[in-house]
Length: 250
Ligand SMILES: [Ca+2]
Image (tube, rainbow, N blue to C red; front, side):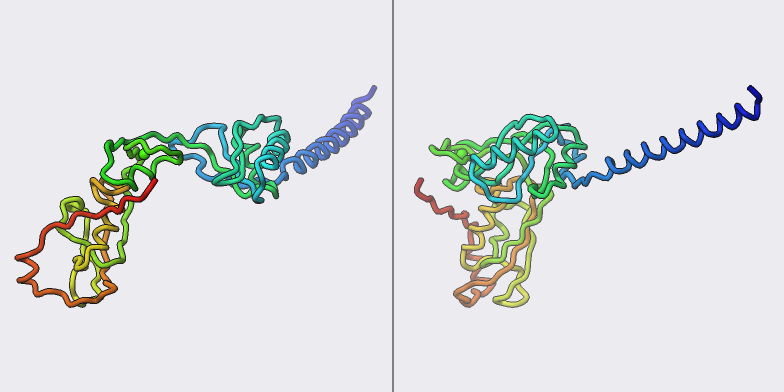
């Protein structure tokens, strides 16, 4: 066989090979075009690899959630870890990141969020109020403790109420003066008490939900719009007001 003939055969084979490669590439291109959605809270320091919560678009009963969860997880050969039907309708599962992105693009899915590791920061027990005891548990009876997993040190709360007792010991140096719409030019100091109660519930070190370094600013407006006492009078009679927390029946 002459070299020219070998060369023709070689070129023909090359053309065929190129054609096959093109077809394969075209096929791969079609597969890669499968729609993908975004995974929320991915790549955070506390993200759990391969563990996701899938929230469905529709509000379904427990049986329908289980059925839809099984259907969607089954598309990727995964088992459903848990189903949810109270706060949200959805399920959790362990799948690859690629599968989770495919799930996020499914029309039946609202969003997919990656599971996160959380841990309790501290427990306050006994609790000084019914509200703190109640806020950290869904079920009764109350356990006379409040466990929180964040001190909210990256949060600034704005209290728009009757003002805040700026000198109250439960606030330390975390409270900052705000606007005053009653006696213009004031610093938002509380002349009624309700705003201090609200601020104490939000960020008081003993009575508050956010206990650590959360700072907050106060705004003052009082429904009674009563006259502000003279400064000399306030200086001689004022004392720190204790945030009053109204007990509620269990
Ligand atoms: Ca509790």
